[in-house]
Image (cartoon, rainbow, N blue to C red; front, top):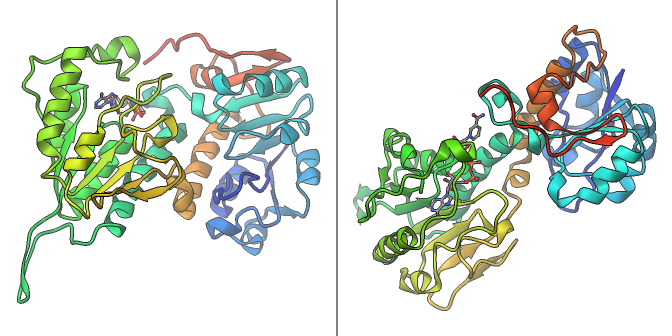
Length: 381
Ligand code: NAD
């Protein structure tokens, strides 16, 4: 059985789903590997490096799709790519099935199986395949680096011969996977770091990373994380008011705000309002990692960097992982390789698409000519 990776089609997408190292591991599972010529170039992996790792380099995408049994890629397939699927082929990629129902149906009708990397259940056993987390980690890190690149001062405080420099003050809103990565990056650069999340259980994690958790003047609103699989739900109006009041106090003090707050299947909550932006010092920077879902700040322009009248830079890029393509490709290719390990219990180069396995079942959105999304809830946590 042969696994192949085409070059990503979406303009500006620099990631690749197979690296020379991941290909070596896939070969150990008994698979042959193929790559489209140039697929790894933007992530720093040359055709020669793949060839040296025993990967067949194929010149044309159509030929690659034709000859392989398993296609591993990053972005959801385009309409043209789905047409290249045939019965008995397996596609593994991000898919966002709820937003791409027609493509999913088409893949099912063609008889192909599809594993959506964004549907891997977030249970302990599946962490090694959790591409949403590996990419969110990179986005959180890169958000801080991007903020620093647009900020005119040091992160850390310094006493120098030329004068005393105060440390930067960074506020991270939302302490999920991306937020925690941003907090870790910010504290390691020496900034005073504050963080807030509606889930009170993250306070301890925030504090253990050397940041300060922002508490509200409000009787704790216990968000029942267990009911939502660890995700946040919509806050009550009273809680939201208390949160905005606190943020209004902080706005003139903070130099950098990184917002990461998301609620599953909804627009991002508006948390950093226009009056807060206006209250910030000139030279301050906001990085809105929720830009793709409408932004935590409504002034954010998706995929752009703007500077407000009062000199605040607002960054709404949605391609942070792609901006660190070598790192993100390495982690994503490893997530894929672990998925293939689970699909190959005998290490015999044969896919065993075991729908009794919670992780495989959860991520499979089409199989045996049927749409299998949404999956039943996982049995184990
Ligand atoms: P996410 O991207 O959906 O949301 C980001 C953060 O925004 C969350 O922490 C959320 O609580 C927060 N948020 C929502 N509304 C907010 C508001 N009004 N103000 C401030 N913050 C707000 O979440 P995520 O990063 O994907 O992860 C969420 C949860 O899933 C966490 O509990 C995480 O530990 C858990 N998780 C578990 C696994 C696993 O076990 N394999 C893997 C990844 C994540």
